[in-house]
Amino acid sequence: MTSSKHFDYSQGFSRNIGWVTTAEQDRLRKARVAVAGQGGVGGAHVLTLARLGIGAFNIADFDSFEVHNFNRQVGASMQTIGRPKVEVLAEMASSINPEADIRSFPRGVTPDNVGDFLKDVDVYVDGIDFFAIEARRLLFAECERRGIPALTAAPLGMGVSMLYFKPGAMSFEEYFKVEGHPQQEQYARFIAGLSPAMLQRGYLVAPESVNFAERRGPSTMMACDLCAGVMGTSVLKVLLGRGELRPAPWAMQFDAYRQKLSFTWRPGGNSNPLQQLLMMLIRPMLRGQMKK
Image (cartoon, helix red, strand yellow):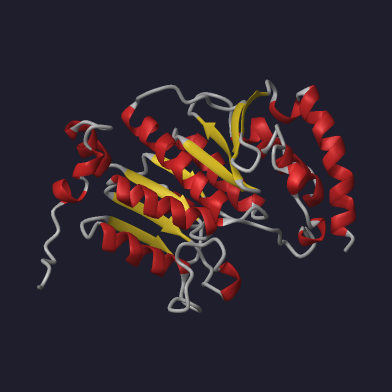
């Protein structure tokens, strides 16, 4: 029996109706979401949002798939080794929604193209590598300038930590306070800001797997899946104006391994006394790592 290849948007996303109205689904269809990074979390974000029925994407990544991506990246397989991540994820999203308007940026996001990357965008979703702090700062600063809601969901251990930077509220730089600091201190501040509750710390069984000098660390697919679920829901709430979503200096962390949920509020971001104490614990670990 031959199956029909005809695509119908309303039928393809009909099972969303009930959790969203038909009018809200039409709003999602007309939305454009930018996702920088198509690896562990970024690729999962794109596919989750494509199945939500988001109608347009700007996606960026300069990297290609390799074997060491298999444990966590939805686009990584034997068939995609060596292929550009942005190309593979564009194909995967298009196979879910052939009508989707996808603008690809195969050189990643740079000062030269950040304006084009964020053009016409309703929401920015952060999926770039942990260590790419300068690119992340560029993107969040441009989102702030343009009044674009910006969200990041960090895959930590077997959980997720979520931050929402709402236009007019605390900015990325006001929260993390990394400007003017050397790279090692920027890492310390980024870790502390991403994970004020540090729920993942207690079950890292092989600390030697973390190597900041080589820019690598352990990861799990479960964390990426949790990030995609939390992010997809948060993007829905932003686009539809439904439900509470606490912006920075609030952070939310859920750890599936420890079965714990934590909401933290850090007025002043990393200048908060609790964050200062946390960074005092993180810095010695980083000093040891960066000397390796």
